[in-house]
Length: 333
Image (cartoon, rainbow, N blue to C red; front, top):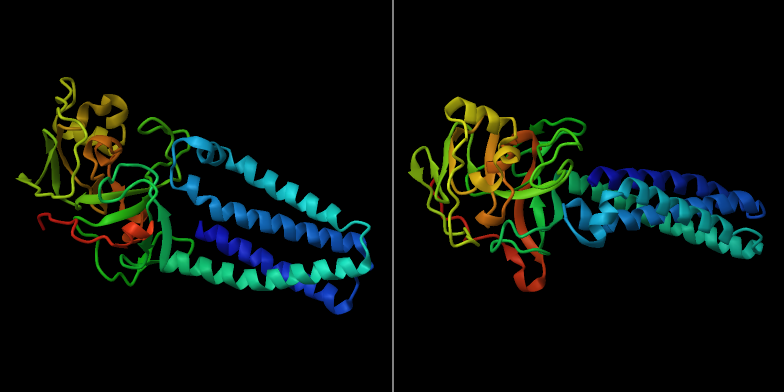
């Protein structure tokens, strides 16, 4: 998201540079050239608007109009930009020179306003804070569908551009942290929890740290053999599911889990009784607070450190739920 914002900001800056030359030269009599630049502005503006509302499907919404738009966004986005550009071009064809001047100057004013906001806003989103919308009920009641929150992107270290390396971390990831991360899928063809999750942002709570043994017995989590005391969990079902009778044991179970195929093979049967696994180094075991309605590390494996984007910090919308995520982390250290 932030990279797209910066890119559009750069495009608008280039646009402003060339259109400034037209304004200085007062070459408004060249209708086709002015119409072309007007069309480019309209196309860029449509791209910006589409990008701003794309949070509705980039965060993984699974149904409704935004899901369909998101599914075909590589077709929809260019089509909208092209349609807007063509519309903008023909709007200025055969217009009076004064009208052309007025439109071009207005476009330039907007471009000069937009490009620094987009570039510096994108940089701020990349390094500091980013907005995130809760797309599902997997974190209920801590976070509800439709909650908008800020994600602290520097607490675990600032990601250097074009790499997965992080520098100057304020502190490491801790148990109980609610993290936003890129889903650990390497291909759009892979299917997890009912469909492809490639490229989506997920939000879950960190339960297991690197090197720890995690096990689930009748819905209760055990870390290194000791039950994890949690006051934030919700169980939607009154009954617990038995463990699958044909599940592998020991190292074989660990291997299938690390290959991210455990959920695809055994489905919900591993929800409440999950055999002991060791969290690999540099990775985390994450779960949703709504334990019976969460697609999490039980089903698709660990979260790599490099995939972690930041920590959920504060709800800002709706106003009635605004505030820091506090009082939700009664857990064993």
